Amino acid sequence: MAEQSDYAGTAAEIQTIEAPQLDYLPPRMKGTPPKIGLIGCGGITEQHLIAYRDAGYDVVAMSDKKIERAQGRRDEFFPNAKVYEKYADLLADPRIVVVDIATHPAERAPLIRQAILAGKHVLSQKPFVVDLKLGKELADLADKQGVKLAVNQNGRWAPHVSYMRQAINAGLIGDVTSITTTVAWNHNWTKDTPFNNIPHLLLYDFAIHWFDMANCYMTGRKAERIYAATRNLIGQEARPDLGGAITIEYPDALVSMHFDANTRHGPRDETLIVGTKGALHSQGPDLTNQTLTLTTEQGQAFPDLQGAWFSAGFDGTMSELLVAIEEDRQPSNNPRHNMDSLALAFAAMDSAQKGQPVTAGSVTQMHDDWLAYPESPA
Image (cartoon, rainbow, N blue to C red):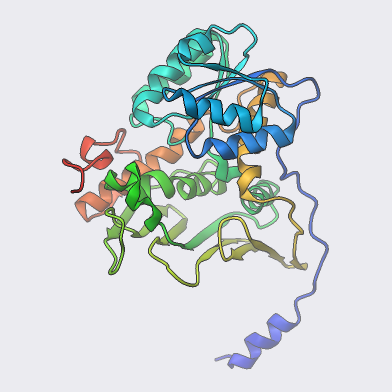
């Protein structure tokens, strides 16, 4: 049996090598970007607009049911943009080629449909839909109308996630055999927001990013079963369960996720991806500050990543859509690929409800009681 010092000695012998140059940054069009309209001007759209402004994109119109929110976003980011009180007027604006729909899910699907029928390319906020059948109908409609539809699954373009995706696609670590993710942060800020009334807030609105990452890392491989457990953690202030553990079983691989959204001190975000030829390890105190290590037989590389999830992630989702329009192809964040990620999330929520493993792909829609408690908290 090897002594502990043997392992330490082996680690000490690993050589530092130059990090491979991978195309992990948001893509860029060759031509002039088309004009963009924004429907829904809530809190997260600040990040959308920061990214679009910094990328040089032209947002020419905004709409929100609370017109003062649209006016505020216009004044801060795109002073020459027109503000529409009615989204139908924005969709009728002939200048607009692409519409970013950033409303809540309940009202999003009808807006996506109307935007497609108006001949606009669409970037949908995530989670895309609450029913996969509806998602397929929207994807089919976009194809029929000759427009592109993409999902704002912005975690894909967080620099560390994007680099790891590209490294896997390039075969640098071989076939993925396991993924282990731990995310610890404080999500109690949701106690004073509408999010506080979503029972599966952790899995539905937040962990969807990591289900989507797993779907990307596994590059087309199909999961077999999913087991998820969530718990209300001692001392938490928000109503939904803030603790979660998920296992996704593949025929020849395993994905494990642990979430603690009640972390008051010492937040952490860490992912280890092990492959047959190497490993990727990303770690840091939060979503935006990550150090990445690539280890192979040749040695260890430490890519010097540029940017951060906020706002590179939001840049990436829109930029991928724009390049797809220019190249007349499906964007990589297209709805059909994203629905594979949603299927993982739906199965996880079903498993958490039942307290037992669920067959992957067997759950095609969210139940009403997963979206909202029967009554709002007092």
